[in-house]
Length: 542
Picture 1 (cartoon, rainbow, N blue to C red):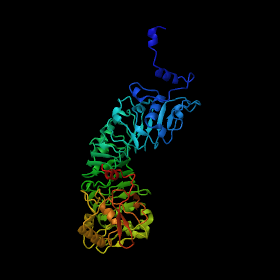
Picture 2 (picture 1 turned 120 degrees about the horizontal axis):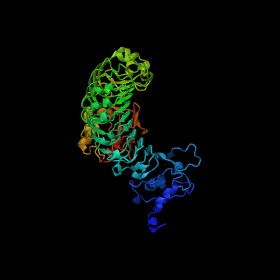
Picture 3 (picture 1 turned 90 degrees about the vertical axis):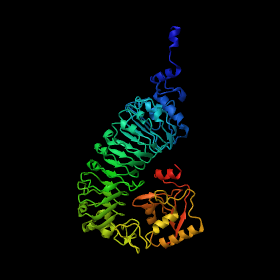
Picture 4 (picture 1 turned 180 degrees about the horizontal axis):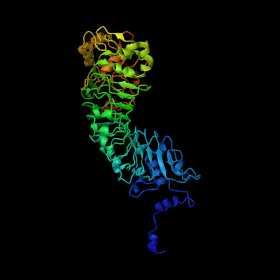
């Protein structure tokens, strides 16, 4: 062999890589890889890539790292790794890696981009690793993730999706980045994934309008989850182009304008929720249209907006009438008139109507024994809406223990959750005494103080003494719009219509200290609501 031929021999690392592909020669491979010596432009072997992953992401601290970096064990036997073509192979050599699933495994790093270059990787699921971030912008383009179909990075430490178009090829079907701290506008790069079936961007800090061509580009979507961000302006009418949509949740944002009638053309929808868009003004306004073409819908939630007018006689005319899961929530709007008799066609239904301006209920509805899981059979119309002049925190009777209570000051509408005192400004005065934020909500100042001077303190006490007779903890909770968390004397989580709220350390807690009238104002420490990302992040000063 000439000296020139000798100089052209591969480096030791490449030689070992070659030998790894010939198991009859050796099974020994290096157990450490220097990240500074690698790049996606010179791909590593699968074992080297996973070794880099382990070393970069604090592998020794992982909750489960069984078999990782074991030189005598196939990577297909490392915890969280799945490979293809191993069914008939008893030796479990290093076959193509198709899945990495290391959910809630205490990964702590910025994920090495080399992981996305594993040539056969179909599923990457690293959810619930709070200290894991991904720098998508560091990836070099379309060679990454050519076979990737499912990318799940929910409940991690992501703050940006810039460059996410480089994370996978054209085959990506599901992208889940919910419950991170992703900021900025809607990540339009995701619209390059034309084959997406499921997109979950919920529980982040995104803001601004939704793209007008959202449904046009992502027309294959089955599931679109955008809840609990700060998206503004109108729901794009192009959403109607995603004709295969089954689940659409854009609740808890700051959307406005009217409901696009095009939503009524999404015939495959089983769940549609647009609730609570009141971060700005009244949220979604205008009339409630009938959604008459939605023949698969089982959960419709439009609560907490500014919808007006009557409930149409043809409301949900094509929906299943015998589904045991049917739930309709239009509470907290400005609907008027009589609840139409046509709704009696539903055999089993949960129909939430409270806090509107409903005048009457068609008598046929009060005999629907299957509604509210039998509560209407027990309590008649009261199980749908409390009568005028009565109220409770649910706006309807839910059990013998929680009837609709008389309201001496008057409750002018059916389904009242607040009893208006003789002084109709009493609740507003109470809120002023407690403190308001710029949106009229009762957020307490960050120093946690109530009025301190003698005049304000005396005024607060007078208001509370006059208010507590007719205003319950639940009433104040509703008025303050999620800004206080009532606790019972045992400090258990407050539960209302199937939702629970844990105390948050920068928000007022109202606790009943006697059966008659007194409330104790206090602050909880070191407690957080795990799911309420917006509220927690704000409490931390974001």
